[in-house]
Image (cartoon, rainbow, N blue to C red; front, side, top):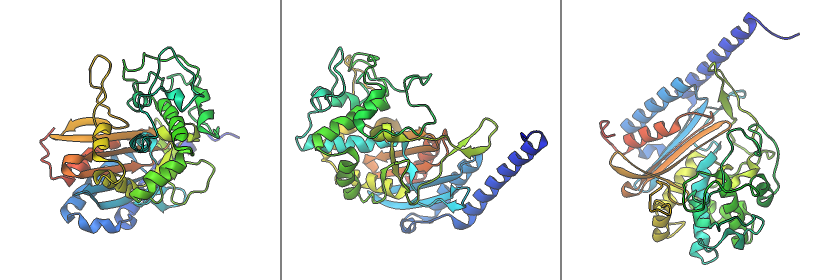
Length: 384
């Protein structure tokens, strides 16, 4: 018979108290510290931990990992709360979280490596590499797709024609993923309008595979992950048993934390289907700052705002968001999907960066990332 009445309310209350107890116990006793922690000043660590504690308590975050890069090197990384509430597994700096759209800067870096090597023409029509994507009324280039100027649609608000929000449908290849949107009309003439599109990055993945003559994830592993020391970063394979992968959580309308919906991200690996940790993403930032992955001139190209055909800057480079905050020029990206919210940022002029990953969707981790950045760089609180 159905369960109803006061019992449901009592269970919900006990769940809230259980999550709170687990969080407090974990934060106070078993939060995992990386060896990098010792190189960040004690007062800064204390201030960051206080900021994280407040954020997690306010927003009922089950688990979170964060990292700081200073002087071009990872200086601190730490896990807080639980990676898996059901099994009491604490989050650590090596816990693997879904990156969501933070996958895009990684993909852009890999594409620009191929461009540097003369294997990919950023200005050629994408059909030169990905003939499976049909020609449209106007040509589309890889550079336009990297800057969200290609006119390819993003997810539809009503979900029609897209993978359902909660879906375990598996796509066996990048080309199969194109079926979701390839025959749809463009939302704008390429180059004329900034239109954020994760599907556009699926076409980018198709282009990369042809230019590299190998699968997307294999090329990225060899040319980005391994050189950067991102030893645990990989594709978010729904069916594979992956050590240290966090569980995914969602907060319902009443504020109760529950398991998030099912997501097989195989249809969008380049734009939102990579798993990584705070440790690995800090290494990625450090590798970019040290010019280990691409040349400085290429990095500058990637970190320069794109422009529409009428000359207006979009505030987005090639795979990276661009903003000026705290009197600093910041390159950043956020990500969000079922069971995850992520943010990371790089400040080239200060040779610094920050990473924040958590296993709850719809959490404002960008705010926490900026707070940690402010603390790490000793910025006065009055700077907007």
